[in-house]
Image 1: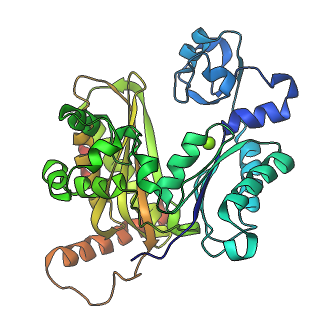
Image 2: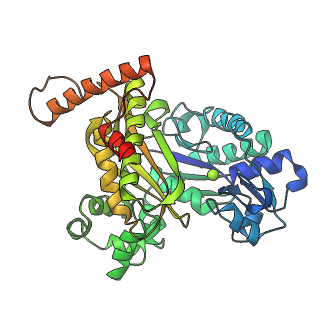
Length: 399
Ligand SMILES: [Mg+2]
């Protein structure tokens, strides 16, 4: 049995836009849209963040700026000021760390906090949640939503449901009740495709899904099905992972022109995998999973993640998994605008994975590849990153 845990999920509301409204009082109460290239609503930029006043016009993050412009010409369109956001982000995290070091950043404005050991010192988690919200408002002038729950999955949903400016508590033992009425899309790992499949057999809510047996879900969706069986019951064992364990290493490319050339997309993925793997090796890290990011000509952005059979810092492994994920995206007939690869679930190399030397089989192959990759890194360090490129890339350039 799992010892009871208490997890806080803190998510700043419309963070960049809130910072702009904080620094420009004349913009408070107005639709504020933060994104690149606001001038005249032209260009390639997308909405990075928008205030709740802007959302009332149908504007959302990742919408092309031109479209946002047409929806709300009277809005305040501003360029992002990342250094300022980073500065406030640090102060947000400093407030969270008053209670514990177990703070796992998810992004610049979002974090999990494991309060399990803190409640004896600081009082009930709900009180801490209220205090955090109050401190963020009083000391920084920024609104946040907070979820309190027995695990990460539920805490994150709780804060989402509380938005904006909310505090939602999921009590121990109340996990099932809390999840029941929610749509299937709330479950992690249920993308539009899986959702369509589940809706196809008449499921609508998490309660519907929770009626299926582990075996039924496994037969339908494989490993993912088993995972969903647990999530539908509010079971999530992942620990809060502070600092480096939670970081990710990623790279992405926006094509000069949207492309339908599958070969170019694959080559780009290979070169991204190469860059990511090389950065992993430089930091002595291995990845336990890969996330593929994919944006098409209509700005539909999808991400697909998968675990790796064993932790790796090799481009070959990241690339092979990225191809599998790409196939899952199903982008036939669409032009591609952007692809990205992120190595996730990072750990230090040699942490548990070393030990005995394997001479044959996949592990030995991996070791040989790793040594080769190390040599490549060395040469690049000495002669620059263009000194060595992969055969597939070279073929592409010549052909
Ligand atoms: Mg946020």
